[in-house]
Image (cartoon, rainbow, N blue to C red; front, top):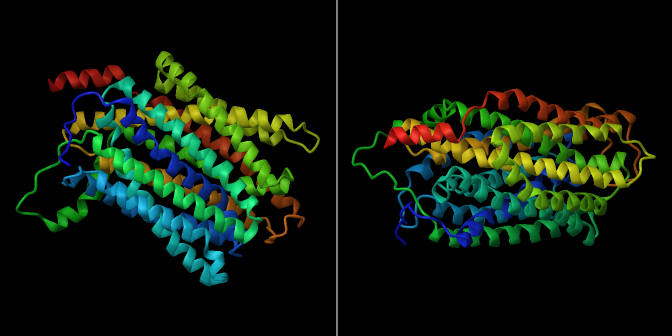
Length: 462
């Protein structure tokens, strides 16, 4: 299919089809964030510090491949368009590697052998995730060229991402429990979510045929090979020089470090401190997800009325307060407050997510207007690397805390853990993520990109 010109409005159905890709990535991301560390320590028998380090190393690897994938997609000339071919490759790899990870226990591996296999599979998973996500994230400036149109498009994406959060955070525990828990439960969950995510990503691939594509650079006869190999990293340095994008990526790092810390801590916090099981984890995140989905229209209105940055600052502070409230939990607390927190945390988390995603295409347009170059792919690569790095910080921090405080590794949930472990887990679910929220606020105060600035730059181009 020839590339569609990037002019004209994109209809509602193509926008929704594109946005639905976030359901698949959200489901896998949250299932991994929620259970990867716990699965490695409790089922595969890998030490918590080693498990957290493996997850971190896989994300450092992302720092090498993400700019490369972004730069390649920026330079791709294909009859399907620059981005679409990668949606197909990534879709197939994502499901296969996710299934393989949660079926490692079926191979009977343990100890060092399990560590090596886990590392290899996580590297494959990271590669597939990047191949799909980076070109996917580079598409919004072409789909929604208007400042407010992007908030609308990203609200669709947030809706599907929250549905994916529910699939990963509610569906995954339910699948594990209905299959008897332990090894068989994780195997079944991995298989179902992996197949479903692949199918949804393939729908996005098919639907992308009707989306606009920017013109790609023409082929040149003489190519400087060394310059070409270095270009992803030189381009990365250039886009980091884009102040709004640089600020937004650091803010996003803090915001996702909040989520990854909370998710990595959840199985331990619910099991050791709250004395609740996978079913209650599912109930909590069901309320969390529903509260987020219901609040999307409200946050669209708030952003339109008060501005993206101002809304972001208010919501991330409220997010911090809601998370920090866990430190006040005590055994005699009414169970109603569990779900009050789920509503508040789910709603404020959604608001911050929508703000960040609505601002990202603005920074991409700003870069194009300033530089005269199309670097959305490399910017998506940096953004995805930050997402992955933040996703590893939580398991790494919690893994180190558990190791330092003497976690007793056992498949028996009734094993009594040391008080030091309980305290560390309690702080990991409350104070540590709240601190990440607060760190983001001074950076947000320095962010200046708004609609008026973009209008001025557009006027200079005419």
